[in-house]
Image (cartoon, rainbow, N blue to C red):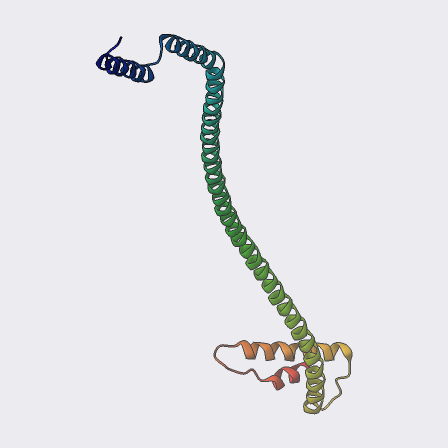
Length: 202
């Protein structure tokens, strides 16, 4: 027969053993859990991790490709900017050259126009001189005729005879006009007597 003291000790021991079993799993549980963890780890390492790695590599490649494209685009933009500056410099040089050529052509055109204007002015002056000379000669012929008639009439009255003979009239007129021109051209201003010449001819 078990004493009450022994019974309570056994219960205490049983209770402690049950408590210890609750905190510490059994060995088979540990083994199976470790086996499952290893299997899951192998499956993850064998199948899942390569997919993650592929996704990460793909994203890395995309990022590196984007950086390469950005660098290439930046280089192309720099080249385009350099080409723009070069073309702008060429355009400015061409504009300056065009201005210089236009200025030179303008100078040539102005010189040509001045030469033409000078030639035209000379031609106009020459034409005017010719016209004046022609008018002067016409006036001289007309004056010679009128003066000849007056001189003939005057000489006829002085001499007292008619001078209607054409040859005689022409000689008298010519001599009178020559003496008149000589008198006008004389620097001393002396005047030759027209009546004595007419009287000698008569």
